[in-house]
Length: 84
Image 1 (cartoon, one colour):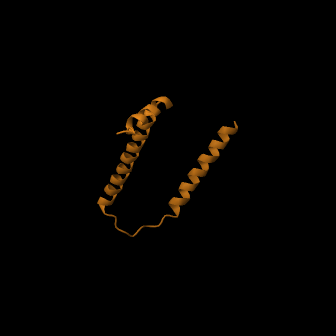
Image 2 (cartoon, helix red, strand yellow):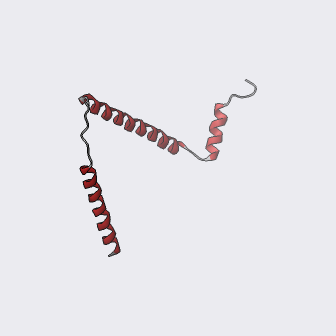
Image 3 (cartoon, helix red, strand yellow):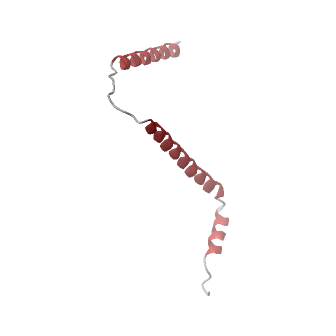
């Protein structure tokens, strides 16, 4: 019962806020080029692609992690021998 009442109060407050913002809206005397919206979409898409690329590289690195013994063997294999 308490959850329903709280949800109803939050919904009512949200509606009141929207009505208040609509009543106080002033006209914007400006010009927005139609290409500006496309530029915003392009920036958002680029950010999403970059985020997915970083996430993919982090996941790959996580799955490439192996046991400590294998890691030590791999490091020894990449280091040159002292006599050569």
